[in-house]
Amino acid sequence: MNRRSIFQRSMLLATGVCAALLSACSTPHIQDYAKETPALELSDYFNGTLDAYGIFSDRSGKVVKRFTVVMNCSWQGDAGTLDESFSYSDGTTQRRIWRLTRHANGRYTGKADDVVGQADGQQSGNAFNWSYTLALPVDGRVIEVQFDDWMYLLSDKVMINKAAMRKWGVGLGEVTLSFVKR
View 1: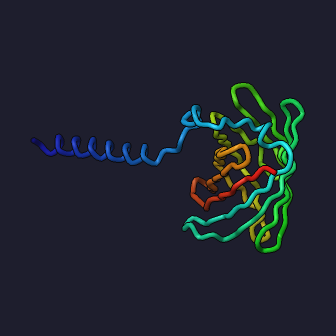
View 2 (view 1 turned 180 degrees about the vertical axis):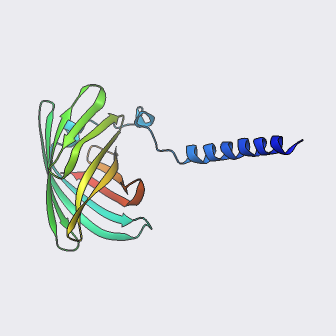
View 3 (view 1 turned 30 degrees about the horizontal axis):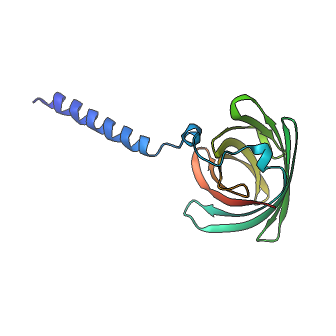
């Protein structure tokens, strides 16, 4: 075997290993949850008053902030309003009002005052995934952070939410919260 052939085989092997590693790190697809129950219908679950309890953990996994949320939610046809009142462990408060629109095939769009552009989401089975950019105040300035947000309905009263936060593709941390419907 000559050097060129050895080099080509080595490169082919390295490419295969890299592809396998990258596929192992790939994110789930919303269709993976199509047969999961109970089936999530956003307008049913996010209707009325809900309480949420959450944490923000940094990229090392350390919990750096805790919070609670009271949500007042309502729907008129395909238009939903989620009025969220946050109370953080450091004593600060925040309010976000989501305006959601239901589209065909389980698709949703959403807007809020601190969302840059539009949130786009998809529901399937017991899961909902959406992505959006949030303008977050940090140390006296505002930074735009991308969210990959996953919600999983566990029962008619409880849903778990995990959201990965990134800036320029770099992981900043994760938000984890549980919703409890009153």
